[in-house]
Image 1 (cartoon, rainbow, N blue to C red):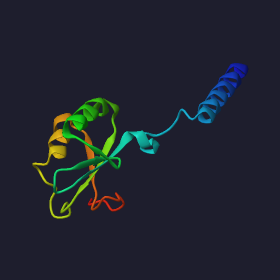
Image 2 (image 1 turned 90 degrees about the vertical axis):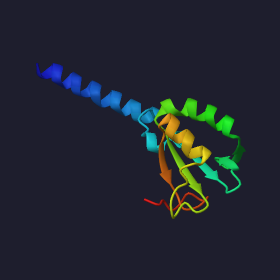
Image 3 (image 1 turned 90 degrees about the horizontal axis):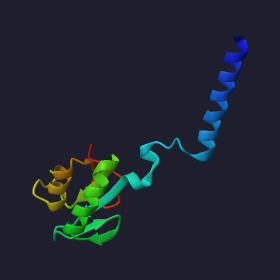
Image 4 (image 1 turned 180 degrees about the vertical axis):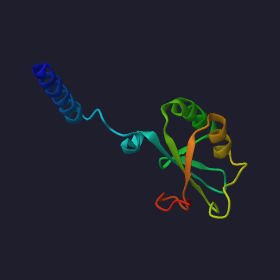
Length: 113
């Protein structure tokens, strides 16, 4: 019986070490692909991860992204007072029920909450 417990313990120890070596234990928050950075200008121009994107393209991107459990970092001009409820981005976030963290500016360094 002691031998069985020893083998079981060694097996668990080595398989756990192997998983960590291969990097298969990443947390979702450490995966940069699980975060989309969106900045919306007053002119309704939208940038996704620093690149311009249309509302139609963003809709397709959100459709694919919504099942992955990621989060959107969102910012726009004047967001400190109140996030715009009628913006195209907010409408899409509600449509796909994507988690969002709101920031004060386009650097995404200071969250509102």
